[in-house]
Image (cartoon, rainbow, N blue to C red; front, side):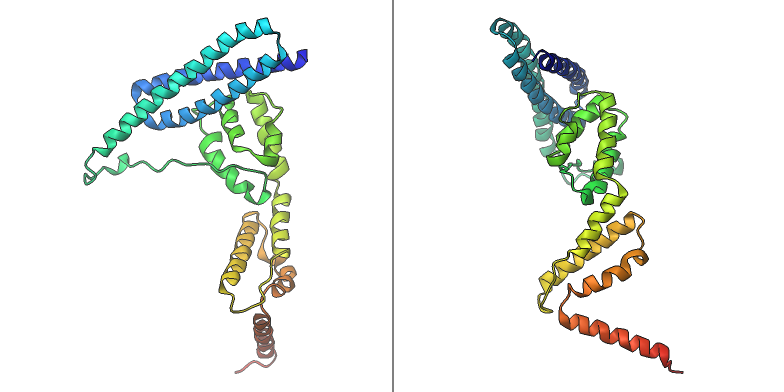
Length: 279
């Protein structure tokens, strides 16, 4: 129990330090009224405020009543400070939103003032087929963002991992070294080329067949599934020549009988032209 308490206190100290640093950054953004950074920082602060509350509750369960009373004072001070900053941010954002509504929408803005919509990340649950897309999006926006340190990147990454991937970070403390280890583990467990290739190959080998040539909706669905799998295999440098012949019998089993007959008829005609060319 003592070890658990010590670990929780250490995690809390790290998180409080991170929150203090984030609050300083927010304070500067509030002075500059930098709404883009404020909105993102507010989301991170809300997340960290919740994490801190959970750590406080875990610590209070392990210490005696007298110590809890003293610790509660400091805990509430951090929570109140976070809440004050969140309210300040919301006031600034609300003010700007109101101001923007009053602008003349017909005014032509210079091209360099146009802002792209904010990127919203989806949660990643561990599907190898979605790893490349998820990682590329996260890497370009967060991992390679030089304005963030590794602890901040790690805190953001933890909010995006759910299901099987959340187990990777469950026991890791919030620090820079563990951030690197977490990325390494995620790539080894969910992002290896052979795993991704195997997932898309299995997708092709287990296609849900379409029996009727009149079922246009299901035929489109089948085509899209094949197209997505093939393109993703090519993205992993797997050429069509290496799996095309293997999949032809499988694909023929997935399409209506009329299409199979047409395929075999055309294939037979091509062979005949090759044997008896017309001059």
